[in-house]
Figure 1 (cartoon, helix red, strand yellow):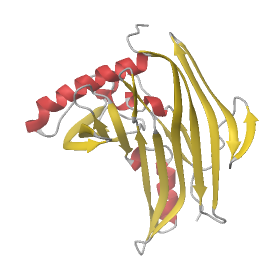
Figure 2 (figure 1 turned 135 degrees about the vertical axis):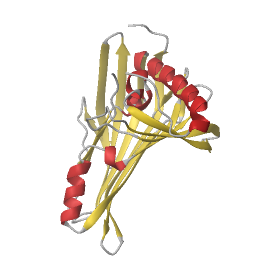
Figure 3 (figure 1 turned 90 degrees about the horizontal axis):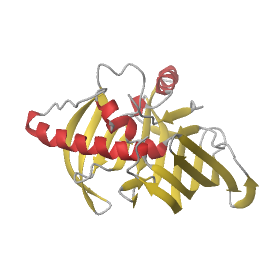
Figure 4 (figure 1 turned 180 degrees about the horizontal axis):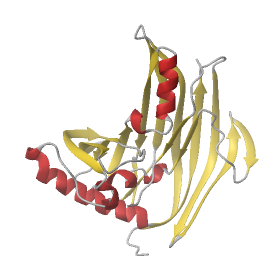
Length: 259
């Protein structure tokens, strides 16, 4: 079984208020979304300068199973309108290397803008393009959180990532997002391929934001599993990728910035 390349991107920017399908929770949901919009504004406008290690483990199980581990020195700098991002590949499968300003070496998956995943879902400009539903309360990473679902509204004509979100109610920050497989890039091609092979896709994808600095949360892990369910309801995993972000070093995290 040869899987199709899976792409996913989180982007932000562009009008207004939320819709709740549950009248009993409408006021609470509106307050959460207001705080999250403010959180996304600070995230989207913050001056940032940090480095971290980005460990990418990718496994492909078609033909000969293979796992590769890429370790990058990831650098991100944003000040005013200037933004710089680079990766230096410092190890492959445990062997040291030194490829400066490297592209991503993963084969089956491509990703970008993980840090800004919440912005494309919860910023004020994007809330007008989504419908939201209050799901309930939960505990995550020793934090009390609320869970909401974001789904595309009628104005959202182009594919954008959406899904289930774990949010700190007191400040609107995002701790975790589980992405709906239908919102991921290339899903339609993956679905068409699966149908032609008498199966259906089952993609699990999530982003976690465990590290907090100056009121902002930074990625700790992203994970995607691409699997297929055959006509006998048997699951076959074709590929998976796990991205760990660790050993952060912060030089600038300024959140009250006006451009």
